[in-house]
Image (cartoon, rainbow, N blue to C red; front, side, top):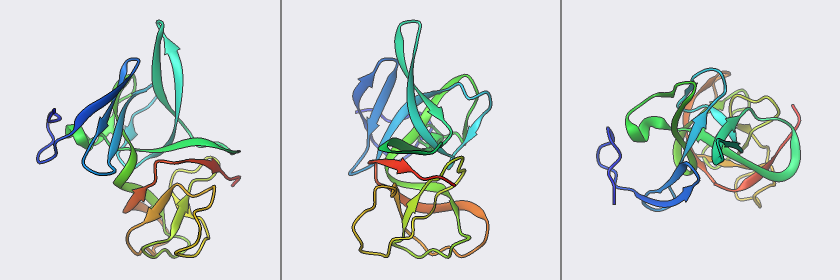
Length: 174
């Protein structure tokens, strides 16, 4: 077992190695993955990204890309969560952590009033999770990547509590 530096009260186990990256399995459903940020700028905790991979010096590296329309159910939506090592960002050209599944604070757009239990999705060029449109208790839609855990009705983007499903999903057009 390891205790991530700068993170108190949470024990996690490194369960899988992906080339130069590691996956950290926490208690229950919480899963983080270390990723390399080569986006040209820092990313901040709560940012919504898609996971991709590239080969660098013969090593497979997980990298972050911006959401883009892709109706194939194969996009892995992740949330930047470098708080596991006590940091609020992942600087450009450095490694950091993203949340793949579990409870996380994520950028959510409250323009469409949200209540706990609403399904959330990300759309083309989206910078926040938005209402997917399905009623609570409905079958999880192919666009759904998270579930809202609190009410939010402000017409702005803010960090809100969500449960990231960890499934692969489609990214709808804007």
